[in-house]
Amino acid sequence: QVQLVESGGGSVQAGGSLRLSCLAGIYSYTGRCMAWFRQAPGKEREGVAVINTSGGRTYYFASVKGRFTISQDSAKNTVYLQMNSLQPEDTALYYCAATRGCAPQSLATLTIEYHYWGRGTQVTVSS
Image (cartoon, rainbow, N blue to C red; front, side):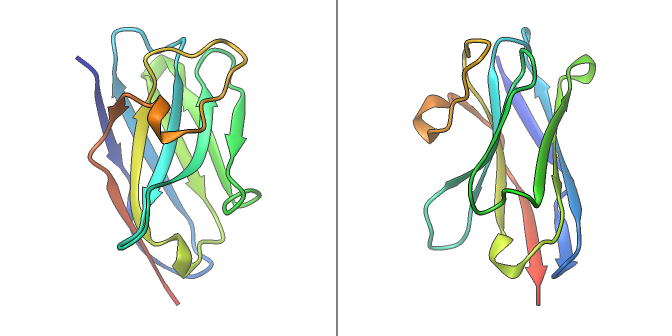
């Protein structure tokens, strides 16, 4: 059984920062890709950032590149998303997701590649 629990969401003003955490209740944390996705009301779920847990290779989607940073603490089975320079368009429900497996240099960027999902944490950015 895989459980992903997100935390750290909240409300901030434009230009502010938040750090999201995802605690992965997974028997084998390494050898997977883990990612943050987000979904705003009336919009499709979109990718935010990806990390390969075996080595830490990362990928950022264009809308957040340069502002968000994904990282991990493998000893704690936790993935983080540091979000800086937040804008109202970043308002969404943020989900943590994990694949069943991920080759060491791979980065899974498609929603369909992720089999395990958390329930999400809300981020609201006001102007």
